[in-house]
Image 1 (spheres, rainbow, N blue to C red):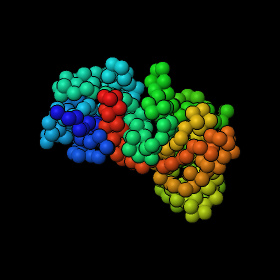
Image 2: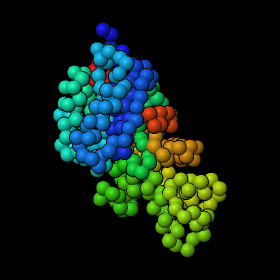
Image 3: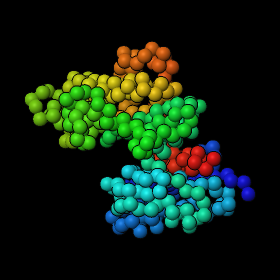
Image 4: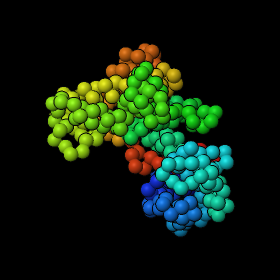
Length: 314
């Protein structure tokens, strides 16, 4: 029987989003349920199986090529293990084996940044490129790379920790312990921290009109002309641009695709990145490399898990 479908599972700390997807990336069936992480690993695994059962209800299992799972890490991809992850109850948990055994379908696991990278490469903004880097800028900064058409994981499967490229010697302390990382200077969290520092000083700013200030309010007020918000963004987005110029010079990709909450702010973000790249990239690299906004939004995880299943089962 012809293999026409794959299953993608987007496993998150709060919800599991699973879909039956055809080989062109079109979703045929989908379901989202609560992860119920607080109830322990058995419940989470049962919930994953429930969603896979549901999307397979109306097709013959023989038509399903593979199952892909995107999960927060660290993972042991070779062994199909979730080693440990802050928002899920797993410790060295064998996730792939019980799924593979239950359905008798090849099953693959990868981290959420890699699957989001695959989704944009196969079905989104990176379609048609050979070398592509994906950067996600939200609470933190992460990413992945496709080199010569294949996902690049690195020797310990931790490649493309873009958030931890140093862009300012002696800069602010990052969650990782180092100072001056992209994440400590350019993430949504970093923008929010700078705003709170401003509010703790005597500086005049319209950010005082809010009870709670996040990166979103900083973007809003910058657009309305607030000088303090504009300064914060100018700095943060410059550092993001420096990080992205470093990536462009390292990988010489066709495309760099930017996703995550910060990319939703649009033109201001992309203009600043372009300005830094023009200043810092080698001319040939700058002229060839296109920077584009990610297209798949909330579907990146599930379609990426599906893309993983398609690529790994070739």
